[in-house]
Image 1 (cartoon, rainbow, N blue to C red):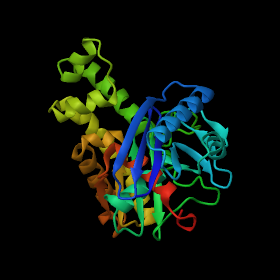
Image 2: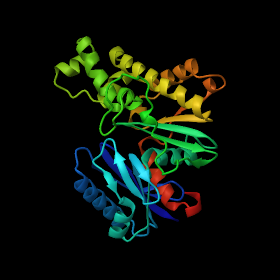
Image 3: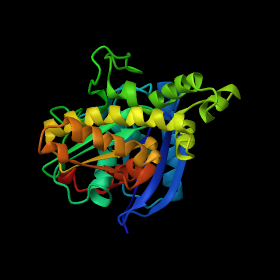
Length: 316
C-alpha cells in the first residue's frame, strides 16, 4: 500500500497527515502557523514533516498545499496573503532536508483535487472550489485537470472583487472589496463583533460583554445553536459568497462549485444563501450551477496534498 505525507499549511495552523492510496489517514498532527515569521514557519514545517516521516518511514513522497501563488517550474512559494512566505523555493528546500521527493501546489487546488477524487466533485469534468478559512482560497478543474494558468498561480478566487470600493483586503493583497475581505472567517468574526454591539441581548452580545473572543468559530457555534443575530451574520456572508459564485458560474460554466474550508462547518446556513444568490444573479443556464458543501471537511487539503504526491508526473 502506497503512503505519502500531505500538508495543508493554513493561515492559522498546519495540518500534517500520512495518507494511503485508499484515502485512509494513518497518521496526523498539527501545529500553529499564525504569527510565525518565515524562518520559524519553515522550521516548524520541517519538524512536522520529520515527525511524520519517523512515524511512517515507508512514505514515498510529500505534498505541500500552501495558501499562496506558486511558481510550478521552480516549486516556489511566491507570495502568501496570510502567511509570512515570499519567494521561497520550498519544494527543493524541503526535499533536500528530508531526502524525499516533495511536490508543491496551492492549498485550495489540492482541496479541490481531493474533492474531485473522493468527495463533492466526483465525476465533474469542470469544477471550482472556494475554501473559506482565515482567508479564501480557490481552485479550478477544467476538462478534468487542475487549471493552474501560465505560471502556476491561477485560481486565486478569493480575490474576485465583489465591492469596488469595499474594505481593504487582508494580508499582502493590495486590492479592495475582495470576497476574502468580505466573506472569510476573518470577515465573519468582524461582522459578528459589529452585530454583537448592535444586539447586546443576543448570544453574541452576551459573549462580547463577557470578554470572549468573537472569532468565526464562536459566531458559527452561536448560529448553529439558533442565535438569530449570528444567523443574520452568516446569511450576510452567504449572500456575499453567492455574488462571487455568480461571476464564477458566468465565466466558467462549471458542473459544480464546492464550498469548503473551516467555515463550511456552518453547512447550509452558508451554502443555501450562496446557492440562492447565484441562482438570482447568474445568466441562464449557469444560474442552475450546482453548489455543494465539501464532503471531506478540514482534511480535504491534506488528503489532496498526499494525493498529489502519489500521482504519476504526467497526471500532476
